[in-house]
Image (cartoon, rainbow, N blue to C red; front, side):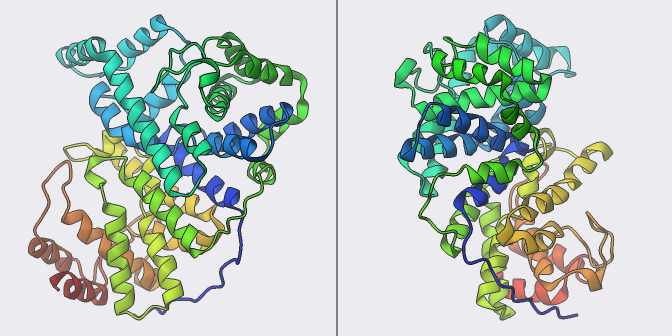
Length: 450
């Protein structure tokens, strides 16, 4: 059954803050944080900046550094899972809620490292961390901060934003990382982004009083005392707390955005898509380059089927972001060397729903959300997440499905090595008519054979 693509009108303009703000829900998934964490951090940092009378480029750096502080967060997920033998999502979430100081950190390491593993494995993992803790912490934060600032730079953000992201984990007393900067040497966007991050983590975990307490007790050690005092002074600002809990927070944060002369045109959409494709692929060593390869195959198949160039450009973006929901799947599952059990399989299947939810928030991609999220549907109705059958699966989804299937087979996976082109095509051919569209398969076979 041939499904012709629908040519849709695209918005002529969209605020940059609106676009990147919608994408931050993907970053929240990767950090194991409640939805909207990045936007709440942006709001907190921006309100403090406004109270201090900061405007212009200085305000813009604070706004975007706080919003995009977690751009590099997926890059250390696999390493964290490897070192601590732990679920990276719950580990990250819980780590942010521990009290400052070495005793609390050590208790956390003892409780969380290789929990549930045989005693010998636990002892080995904990011993390694205790012996090499400083180097491990530096490696993890350096990787995260470097990746985040590099992606921000690729997106064309000012150096103030990039530096703000890079120095996110610096502490006022010099005890932070990656450069062990102290005091006013730490960029102001970094100081505010870290304070806002901690404030929201404890706000979500324990409410207003918990957030106020944590910021106050870290003043002078983690935080600039002046900035901490401004936050604490917001204790009785009902509008501030009401906005943080508002279902319209995204709109509120967008309304606070600094003026930006850049337009969200096709080139900028492509750049953001490529950037978040890198965020997705960095989650696991077994997915490196997957998003870009699937996008490339999708482009080739779309040209074969003579899809309108405007629509094909949109479809390529959907293909590059089809696995964005995997940012919400733990590396204990993504990197498992054996078969997933029933509970793990439920979580893995859930990535398709996450993909749809995230892309639905991004207005230029909202119509593509169901197409990208359906890449694991099968013609026989036995796929997921909705169990769609042949007639309900669009040609565009069938293209992404075929390309994803081929690239998954020809890449290394934790449970097997990469397959040869010939073997991969043979496996896909055996699924034609049940899982894979025959016309899409023949087109792909011709393309990869050339």
